[in-house]
Length: 387
Image 1 (cartoon, helix red, strand yellow):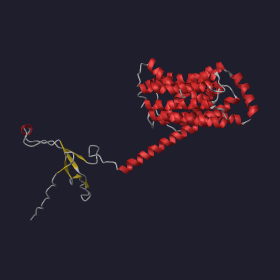
Image 2 (image 1 turned 90 degrees about the horizontal axis):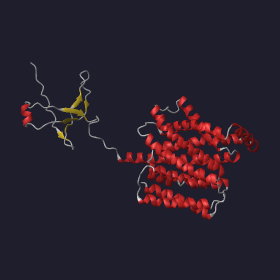
Image 3 (image 1 turned 120 degrees about the horizontal axis):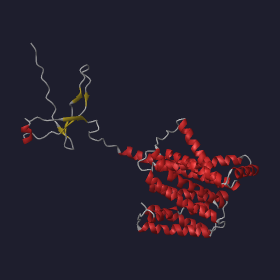
Image 4 (image 1 turned 90 degrees about the vertical axis):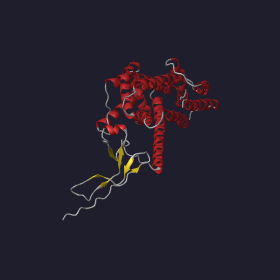
């Protein structure tokens, strides 16, 4: 005689907070080989129309039920604990702080060694070329030994990068020429006027409009740069014009970069590496034409005789640190907003100006320092107004 086992009644459905019906104890996975191991996961029933409706009567009350497990992507999202969010935000702030500190430190070291090299070896075209060559060599090596993943590029990428590289090359050489003629602090004071060029070019060439606060922020920038220029003890027109041309070139570099690199999936580090390589190809023939190997060889021997073997270390250091500080700045753009980057760039310029004045004992008049402070304050106000 076979006894029929009483089957347990199915669990009553529970309505979830979002209105979906939840069968809380219905097993979603049955293992016939090992019935004891049941995966108990809540199932959601969706698309369950009300019984007795006209459409159901026409279909003979046939119901279509779509069930899915709660741990799948359609399930109820699990809230992240507040403590984890706080830890994540704190970790991101620490990461940004490390980026900024590294960026500023590398930039200060570069400017110190760059000025040392230019004082002993006044050939800014070759110095600029060596900086790009060292960076290109470092990145090619890192790609070859797989320290960094090489970028996947196509002809359209290089076509879009070309005008960016032209502007980058002009800005780089012009800034180096400026620092070969004037103090590092003066070059960076004038370069703090870059936002004024950015607004003027965007307004008159691109037709962009800005709020009144942006235009007002240009007043202390232009006024501060002018005050610093007219009170500079060792003013040089070539050095002044080099910094101004560098400002204009870097504004166009940023414009071309925004327009041409939309939709390009290349990391900041690899993007700057490709930019350095293309700029090197553009700059090399012009450096040879303007200065030439004969001048370079004669100047090199003179610098070695006056400085000694340390001069070679200076050249290597300025080339390596130039690439590293630019690479870190482009990498930081992947992590922070343009506004935060702009503020960081302003603080970087302050650190370079102060450190160069201390290290090179640059004479500064109070009125000159006031002009620099006004210009830098204007740059900060500009970054806030652009928010």
